[in-house]
Length: 403
Figure 1 (cartoon, rainbow, N blue to C red):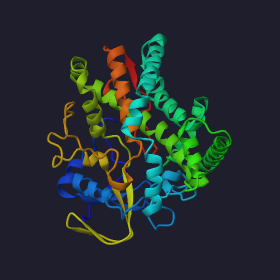
Figure 2 (figure 1 turned 90 degrees about the vertical axis):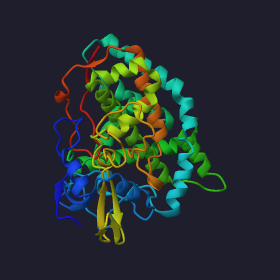
Figure 3 (figure 1 turned 135 degrees about the vertical axis):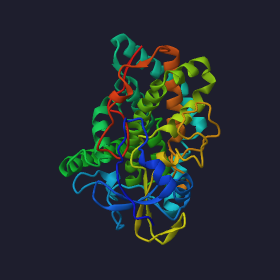
Figure 4 (figure 1 turned 180 degrees about the vertical axis):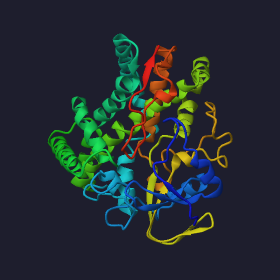
């Protein structure tokens, strides 16, 4: 393995730019060492094939507290996702994991998500209309990017959207790398667990037409189902995903498309490109976060180099998505790119269960903005956008727009 060491997170000129180091790492040091914010060292992968192969290998899974793995966060500032806390973790290995995926995954099919599209569209239109009434400039993240996926996931889980401010704070502590103290995280996570435990019990007493109610009903059947701990963790995990990943991606997608006016104009001229533009935005996003960690429990060879057992590997999906070996013109945003086998949702047995939901939400948002606000533009230069700091996932603090 190379002696090159990089320090994560890598710096960029703007929140939309890729780190300059990626190109050199892919070319000369695709299996590098990286120093994490905790000070621990991990293996850092940046080539498409290496990242895809490792993520697709069922032997290698997310590190937990039981593994002697590299820590992402400095002592006392890492949330459950950064520390690999097992207190409420979902089954991540072997048949229990596959059983959980089969039960939950059936509710996130493309067909089911398509059925939600009309309701999502009405919500997106209402949110955009409200933003227009309030006048320009506006923060698109606060007005649309955050509330739409939050309302959708709250409705899916049967939790009241009025609690979204609490959910947002709890999600931040769950994903904290350097943003929160140990005391803040412990208090927030105890509140989060108590809230979701109470919600599961309420749904058990009075089931409704939502995902958790259905999972609870199945669990009480003759074949059994998810345990109480798994039900609570499922609800928490889906709320975090709805608050952070999709909400952040909406803001980044719109910013990337408005950063160069010809991109937006092309979509206005050809609305059939919306689906491929969403996929290309997912691929082109350089501000995705740390990437996915995997714990290597046995010696493996990657790109001719031996990665020893006990290593923690950081798979940089956004770096892999810019690999010229996999994508012609990888540093060009091609709104008609197809096929587009990007790795933004991971790969293999641990790929994102909610990707059909995220895709549908992104398509609805883009369609709605093109229809309602064809003159939409960024209200600040791209250099004026501010990156979210201190969390495992990447995002923008706000997305100022005018029209």
